[in-house]
Each structure stands twice: as structure tokens, then as C-alpha cells.
Image (cartoon, rainbow, N blue to C red; front, top):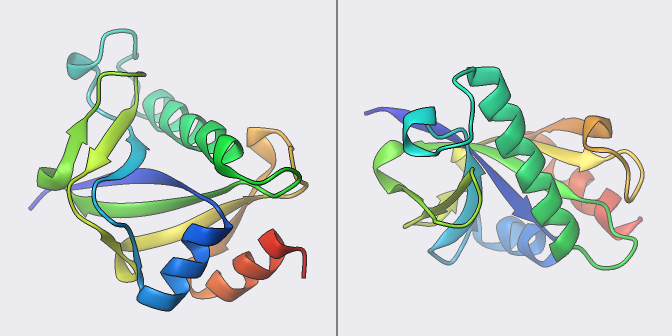
Length: 139
């Protein structure tokens, strides 16, 4: 089955729920993906360009969801392509018609400093979920 890398904007409550339940949800789960250029006018044909556009859009959504002064968090997950549904607003927006289980998450990306640039998002392994939660809370 083909897999798709999706980028999920998260906030502190979503991280707490992920720790408690082992999944991001409930469905539908909003995210961003590097959808093929043929399905979205305006996106280039370069895979890396589309990945960066999806990651950046997820970071922007995470900023909107985060409480004032809170760090942005984006989870990168690999999901079955069959559950990824494009949405009409934006070039990279998708909905997943299922929850995303923790084993599907590959990594987390979190602001080095709250409100930083997208390029400053730090990479954390999925096994470092507790560290990510502590950083978002300011512990």
C-alpha cells in the first residue's frame, strides 16, 4: 500500500491527548501533504519544493493553534494514501479520514524559540514526545 508523508499541526492539548491515547484525532484530522502537482494547480513539480510547502503550511497552522507565546509543533507522519483526502482551501491542505496512531508518527518539529522562523524548527524523534511536551509547556 502506498504511503504519504503528512504534516500535522499540533498544540499542547493535542500533544497531551497523543500521550494519553496514543493517537492524534478524532477524525477527520487536518494536515498538509506534498500532493502531486497534477492535483493542485500552483504547486511545482519538484518533490522537495512540495514537501517544504506542506511543512511550512503545517507550521503556519500550528502557530494559529498555539496559545500566545507557545512553541509551534508539527508532527511528521506516514499514513496510507487511501486515507488522505485533499481539501479545497490551500495548495497542500488535506484531511485524514482516520486517527493517526503514534507508531505512524516519524518525528516532531518544534520552534527553537516561540514565534521563530520555519527554518528554525528543531527535529525531535517520536520517542522524545515527553521532551516535546515539556518544551511546549515551558518546563
